[in-house]
Amino acid sequence: EKSLSVLTGIEKRNPDFIPALFLSGKIYFFQSDFRKAEDKWRRILKEQPYHTSTGKWLLRLYISEERYEEADQTLIKLLEVSPEDPDILFLAGRLKKDEGKYLDAIEYFEKGFLFEDRLIEAHLDLSEIYSMFGIREKSIRNLEKAAAIGGKEHELYKPVKSLIESME
Image 1 (tube, rainbow, N blue to C red):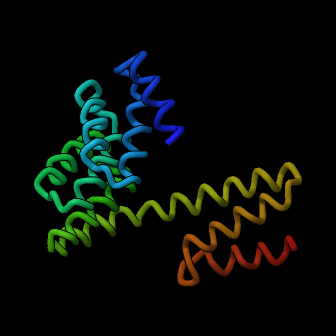
Image 2 (image 1 turned 135 degrees about the horizontal axis):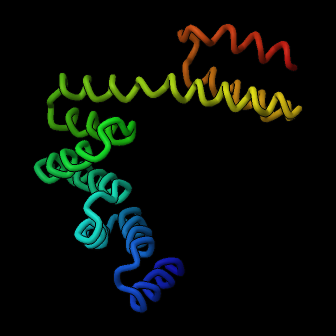
Image 3 (image 1 turned 60 degrees about the horizontal axis):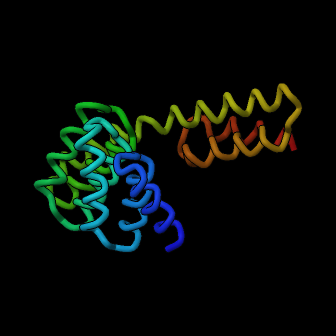
C-alpha cells in the first residue's frame, strides 16, 4: 500500500513517468486488480509501443485471464521486437498450451530451451573470472548453477561436478 501511494504521488506530478506506471501496474497485477494493471501498462505501450518489459507483463495478464485473442496480438508485437527473448518464448509456449495448440507450444518451449546453454556458458565464464581473482566461493557457486541448469543429463554435468570437487 505504501509503495503504491508513493507511485501514485509520482504519477500525479509526472503522469507519463514510465517507471512509476510500470511498477504500479505490477503491484495491481499481484493484487489481482487486473483492470488497473492493464490500464497502467496500456498507457506505457501507447507512448512506447516497444517497451518489452511492459508487453511481457500485459501478456501474462491476458494469459491469466484467458483473454487469448488479446494475448495473441500482444505476442505478435513482442516477437516482432524481440523474437529470441526466452521470457517471451516461454510465455508464448504457455499461451499456446492454454489455447490447446500443443505443437506450437512445443516449438516455442524448445526454442526457449536453447538459451539454457547460453546461461550455462555464462556461469562457467563467470566462474573462471572469480577463480582468476581467487574468489573461490563465488567461482564454485557459479559452477554449481551451471550444473543445475543443465541437469544430470547434460554433457557438461560430469566435468563441471569434477571441477567443483577439485576446488573443494
